[in-house]
Length: 118
Image (cartoon, rainbow, N blue to C red):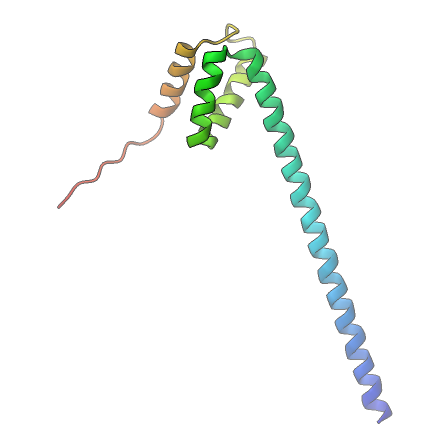
């Protein structure tokens, strides 16, 4: 019985080590996800603050409305405007009409799809 007890103890130790490694791996992944989410949150906060400088109140309202329906488009527009502002390639503040033109230009890049009935 001593040999089987030793083998059972060895299997238990191996399983305990395996479970410990899984927990450590999961904890590391969770920390990476949290760090990524925090970085994204900080970027979005910085973009929102920059929009207060770059856009007029009416343009900010329009961008907020776009953000409610198409968050990815709104974030892309914000990044684009911040980049242009950093390169001194636009007149600040941007009014609602100019923002409409930027949104229209970005929308024209999308493919239009039509549904045909056969």
